[in-house]
Structures are given as structure tokens and as C-alpha cells.
Amino acid sequence: MKLLLLTVSLSILFSAASCKEKTASEKENTTTAENVSGNIKTEELKTEINGVTHRSFAAYNPDIEGKLPVVFVLPEWWGLNDYVKSRVKQLAGLGYYAVGVDYYGDQKVVETPEEAQKLASHFYNIPVDARRMFDAAKHQVILAEKSDYSKMAIVGYCFGGAQALNMGRLSSDFKGVVSFHGNLKTGIRAKNNKVKYLVLNGAADNFVPKEEIAAFKKEMDSAKIDYKFVNYPNALHAFTNPDATAIGKKFNLPIAYNKEADEKSWQEMKTFLAGILK
Image (cartoon, rainbow, N blue to C red; front, top):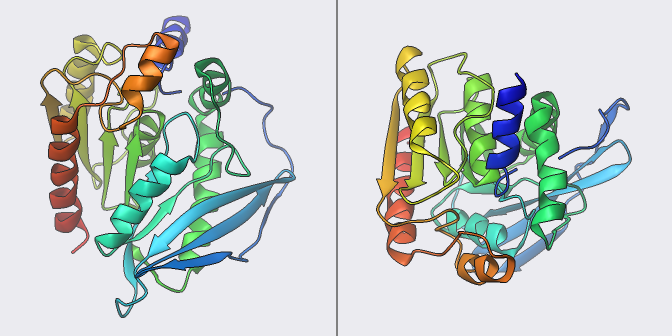
């Protein structure tokens, strides 16, 4: 167990928080703040947990009649920033009710790896809190008028990619999960084989070593899970984020944007979601 915690601590240098266990009851608020831009409508889905308001960011196309399949977007360890919101809007443009989950509360965005690790590692070390946070957001989505909660999927980036895989491991509520450059080894093993997995990984990502990939594939095969693993040549960690190269240089971190891998992985995700949410 000590070895596992050490491995997670090292790997979350880019993906992964430590705060007290939640003991107060969770109070939810369905009030939404709305903004219409073109044919994409955005709104906030609010839930209060232990006095902190978590404001998930939702977007959808109001011109599409009827309820829409739901795609949750789980952020990098930086928090619910503009990059994540841009992905939410892109998914809304594809016809989904897309929701960026606010893990930290008040849409908090951090600026340094040290602060990010402090917050994100909590959800690795106490997975039940990660699920509680996610379930609170999911409940708000179920109440949303445009959401078809019989068709749900999760897309996650880095920290969010690891969390997406964990939600797939823990719950059969989802048709599938997608991880973009997320950690694969989190201490949780798959408990069901109903959820499909798509893992989009950078072949040059130092934070996802070959041994971790092999162990993940063995886990999936042993649980008889339907999964697809794609490795993108020369792609480093965070390869989908256009800001990654500048951030890497600023903090001396081995991360970088890779346009080819970004575009190919996005197409891979589009095909996957279209197949499972039809």
C-alpha cells in the first residue's frame, strides 16, 4: 500500500488533494445562471457541499429538439478553467448536453503545480470523496430539463482522465468513459464490465510508463472489459491543451501541445461517443 501511494504521488505531479473528510450534509441548489451565445446555451449547475458552492458548467444547443445525451467533462488538475469550458462548448456543438464538473468549488482555478497537486491529490487518496463530488454534479444533471440521463458518458483530461476511468470502474451508470493523457493506475480496480473505455495516451508521456500501461491492459482483460487503447507517437503529457507547451516551459515540466495528436484523439473520441450514445 505504501508503494502504491508513493506511485500515485509521483504520477500526480501532473494529474492529481488533501482536505478534511466531508461530514456535513450536501445541500443542492438547482438555480442556473444562463448565457446564450449563438446556438450554444450555457448554464451553471450549482450544488453546495459543506458550505462550498460547486458550480459545474453546462452547455447545449437549444435548437435541437428533445433531450440530449450527457457528456461530463472532468478537468485537468488546474480546475474548471477556460480550456475545459471550451471543450464543453465543443461537445455541445456536437449535440450533447455537456457538463464541466467543478471539483474544487466556486470554479476555482489554480496557477501553480504545487497548488494543483495539493488540491487534486485529495481525490486520489480518498476516492469516495471524488465519487461524492461527481455524484452531486450528476444529480444536478439528472434534474436538468434537456438531459437524457439514460445516455451518459464521461470525458476527462489528465487528472480528469484518471477520474473518468475510476467512475467507469465504480459505476455502471455510464455507456462509456474517455481518458485523454490520464493516469491509469489509481488503486481502484474495475468492478463491472458494462462500461466501455477509450484511453488516448501520449507515447512519450513520462507520467504513464510502459509498466503502468501493461498493468492497465491486464486489468481490463481480466475483467473482460471492452476497451481501446491508443498511443500517439511523440506526444507528451497534456498533448491536447494548446497552453501546455508554455506551461511546461514556465514550470520546467515535460508537457507540450501536439496538434496532430490532439486532432486525431478528438476524432477518435467523436467516433466513440457517437457509437455508445446513439
